[in-house]
Length: 354
Ligand code: NDP
Image (cartoon, rainbow, N blue to C red; front, side, top):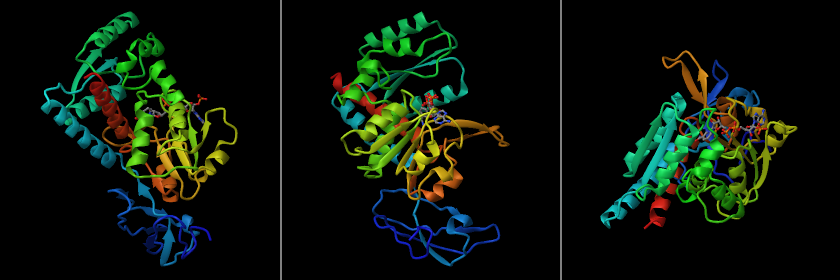
């Protein structure tokens, strides 16, 4: 029986009853329900396209209950715990964790990301230092990093990427002390991640794992398809998803721009992680019914709003979401988890330094 059939009951998932009729604009409304099995998730108050229901206007359906993996909720819970940990630390006479962030240039997106990180530090009781350069040479930037490496009061150093063309990101990342590399990009941390050794996990993949953990999603034995093989997202998340951990133990296919039959590979996936940098790239036909979809993309798309743009992910959310069992929104998904993971790494560094 197909999930679109009346009276369909998914074998292992809680059921959500959807009632309604096709209205003039060929849509029916999903009735929201509560489900105590999942922690404070955002239940989708979603409009299901008529064609997904096979074009029929039955008055009652059972369907996949799409649950939003809400980065706001999960990151808030993590930050509350971090804030308490910092209070305990300070009550013992220790200094709070200290993150030093370096921003080069005037890219509005980078400025926004760095200021969000600094704001999150303030909210959780961390100390932060923002080092801003309008322009800087590679040598001077390395000199600054060496200074921060030596500074006993600094626990974490992050350099906001991308850097201007005249500066090599590789050289800059390599200059950071691996023990303060809370973004987890240094070759030593990348190597330890690969070997399954203790390391600072790169913030975005770590944030995704924390999100899966928060929603208690068991991905053991599932087929995960990662789209994108960058060193900061695609490749490390493919390793973490396949690790013998919980969450983990997925069977992972890592894809990229040269992958043949990407649509077919994705359509077989139980979990899709999209980290491409192309708005709306993952379309509904690439997604299996009931799949988990993690959208890492952050893309600025021009629109008619007063700002002149909106932020969208790599997934065609409107059409993909109704097919999924769980999906991350953009904004409000992985981006917030990235910051929470960064703070967790910084606290870890602080505790290792005591
Ligand atoms: P990169 O540009 O470094 O990597 C993009 C990857 O996508 C590459 O591996 C590329 O393949 C692949 N790709 C490009 N086109 C296709 C295609 N047509 N089919 C299949 N694969 C394709 O990007 P990042 O990994 O740095 O970032 C990806 C997205 O995630 C961006 O939108 C970025 O803004 C966002 N991001 C979000 C973060 C967050 O906190 N939420 C943090 C970091 C990034 P190939 O290697 O062959 O070129």
